Image 1 (cartoon, rainbow, N blue to C red):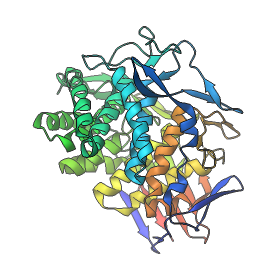
Image 2: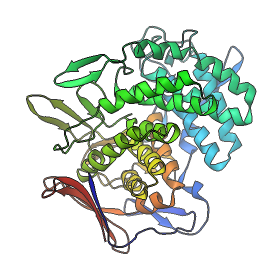
Image 3: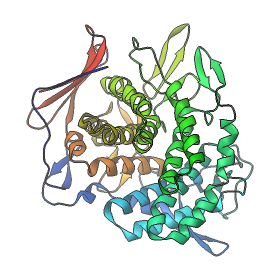
Image 4: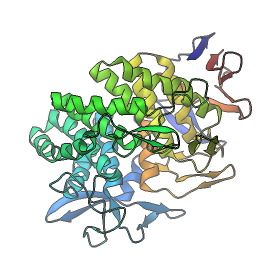
Length: 464
């Protein structure tokens, strides 16, 4: 449950949109224009990318690493120069940028990125991940060999997103994408044949039909939902429903725990990075009109997400049946923040409850310095997303593909939401880990407090 007090309504109608400048290590807001795209700088992402030609086909790839201070390309040793895992998400960024801002160049970049993803898929619906500098495929590497591993589900997500976007503007290309999507259904059904069966790990009951874990399963649900909105097939709906049922069951159910509502990532572990279960369930609730999906997403946001905010975020939580949870604080990365932002934005739409949009803004403010190190993690002047917070004193100033992609995805979502962008500019003024609360304030002194109510034994949000 959540106790939500609103003493003074804090909705602020912003003069859409803004010019940004830096002051005292924080991203600040100056209301001078009506262009929200000023929050979104694709310059560094473009710099990480290049168009290559394989068999005469132009493909957009993104180099994996970029190191301080020159930010030149750096190859992943023994793996390759680019991978499906990153290029798939780059395609999502460019397609989302096109959807929000109508940028035809972003659409073309997305299409060329999708061509690389298509090239890396095999006829059976499995994917390779890396290519080398000579553009040959790394077929033997542990993180690259043909499989339906984490890079494959992200490849599927990109193809399904592309199917939805291009179905409106280029039906021929959309049909090409659809034909490459269909073989993946056999891969998914290979997991779903275990529907109703369970494994157990250190006291955690695990639905055996999940796509390895909750995190990958959520990516597949998001992919299938995009496909389903274009092609509402009953078989696809059943697949979504079974996978979503698995996510609901793979969730911390002890209402007396401060971890209540936490969606496990894998086995007995929650990790911040790549954990979009809330987003997947909220979107499924909206598209399939299923209240149980919405309740599961709300359970996480109303409890576990507030726990994370009260602690100024975490890296991971590992549960054991005979001991206290093992909580790891660092490192923290934008890939751990963005899924929360996307999930809360999606939940605000599904529930029509603006408090989730407020929370999305607060979570995203990690990028502007509301974090353990009090350092900017997304530089709007350069478009760089920095690679992580190592500890309270040090950040990783490298700016690779993943960090930049995830920062941009988060920023794009809150930049077009007037409630979220308002709370994005609240400053974190206090965090008390022992008492489990955090306090954020805006420039006028208005305050929002997120904390654990010891008397009621539940999380609360208090505004004045």
